[in-house]
Length: 69
Image 1 (cartoon, rainbow, N blue to C red):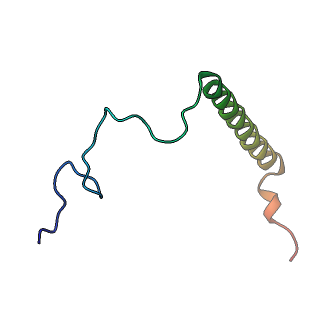
Image 2: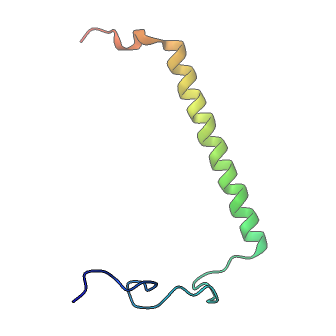
């Protein structure tokens, strides 16, 4: 019994086939544009949040850790 997989075959024995059509949902052009706009909006929101946290950290300075217990 060999301890390695045969070259070019996946877990179920089928080889890679670039001619297969994708299974599942295929988005229309409008849906792809909508997804891209939504992803960009989320990226901008996360970027603004990171900048906000950085700015608050810089304003408060290292003294934020010096407090009575």
